[in-house]
Amino acid sequence: MKFEIVLVLSLVVLGSHFGFSQDTIKLRNASFEEFDENVMRLGQVPREWIDLGDATMTPVDIQPGQWNVDKPAQEGSYYVGMVARDNNTWEGIGQKLDGVLKKDSEYDMSIWLAKAPKFRSKSPLSVEEVLFNAPTILKIWGYNEETKEEELLAQSQPIGNEVWTKYSFTLAPKLGSYTEIDLVVYYAPGHENENGNLLIDNCSDIVEKSK
Image (cartoon, rainbow, N blue to C red; front, top):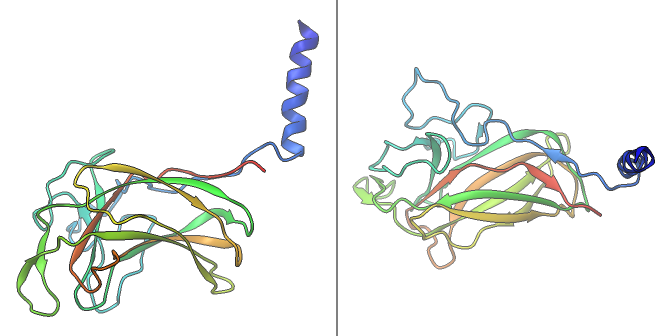
């Protein structure tokens, strides 16, 4: 019995040296719960994340409670709402990673996504209040702060569902290694320059696939 225990422990140790282990990158504030409670949640980027939207437009919102969005969070109490607009602008957030997405490696990641059915805001073009109801997609980018290189690592199918749905992605850097991950909303095919919204919650860890 003692021999069997020693053998198992030896295999675990050997596995860590011969590529059996997996690197895991944990996102900070992955469910968007932390933010400055002294500031309105309207146009507020959650803590640990940076704004990637157009500098002339407002940032993402902490939801629910803004623009007629009342959907409960998938996890916790809050989530992020993003929009793509009819003036060729869109929103996004990014985070510097506590690790590196390595070139020629593959990683698993999942994110819960949905669309708000009653999202109403002002159109940048008409300046009238309209429904932001067009389907959108989520684009996941890798970015290297040192080299300034970026790469589209994955994107979702068009998101038109109003129920929280878990989407799984494989991130496979081919052009370089990346120290930042960016989550950006964009127009679904056939809906370019239409007003749409995307709700994002509960991002998973980023887990390297075994080789």
